[in-house]
Length: 453
Image (tube, rainbow, N blue to C red; front, top):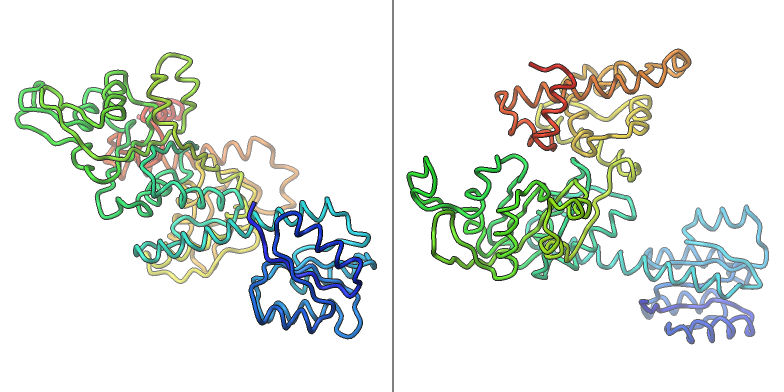
């Protein structure tokens, strides 16, 4: 656990020394002040991470000291300690910037848990700031992945620790959660950032062509192979190869990928030359690879080679506090692209967007906002601009709208998104599936389900 510089501000000598001895025994660096002015002088003269501040002191009281300390250094965390444990005092202290509030007599176990949490939080903040600085130096925007959620912050900090290594990374998560964004961020933060990042969607390439796509082929390797072709492994030499939907690899390609991960070498299809390449593998899947291993459709030894560092990317429904940030980001992006003056959403539209569960995750939210920006007549996106026509347009209508309405709205929107993707892909199912972020097999299922011709 990270050790903190802790300032104890307490006019009672016995209480101050008790806290000092406890904090020092935990390994923290402890300073003491018996009044507000001493506390201010100490913060002015050296670094302090956390202040344990008595609320009731002669002269300058704890609330005034709190405001003065925050004015000097807003990064100082403050825990108020008082014998007068009223709700009003606690609320007032928190409004003024105190992180937490405990009462006398101080429960040292409770205080220790609280300080451990503060130390963990400070480590994350520091790591995140270092990551942002490194991204700026590399010319990449640090807000590429937009988040407020604490678990997302943990994932971003994991990127900062993993990126400099050579370890293979497996990104797990539902379609549309942003696995490719994480792969790009890892590459950008790595020493390989000046070399290529090659992206291959394994589900979008027919099995018969995937081996050639990845490893290349020699002339005459198969019917139609009129010339030698360089594969993605050679293109990615010195850089990173991102294999999306890794669970769709068929057995012969799994064998060749395993050999590459073990020996860092491969052969082109139809060739005998052994080729070495310095390529880092990042893979992603929206499938349960462990169940595929148990079924026998995915090699166990390959799974463990890919499974060195695993990052589970959250679905949007588990990070709903990020939805308003993402909505504002997409509104600005699509308003700029479409030369429209869209300022935000109505409260009713935002309420509906927050309640929806997004089976398609961030990609689905992005499509919803793009559509809304394009069709909106007013500077604010309203309910009529959202593709939830079957949902109640007003709370009073909720009584006569049932569960089937939501299901119908989701299916209507799915059909609309599929139709749009097919048109953009000139009705090529592989390309349409890639645009939608689903496997071609899943697209075929949905085409049959909805009766597409």
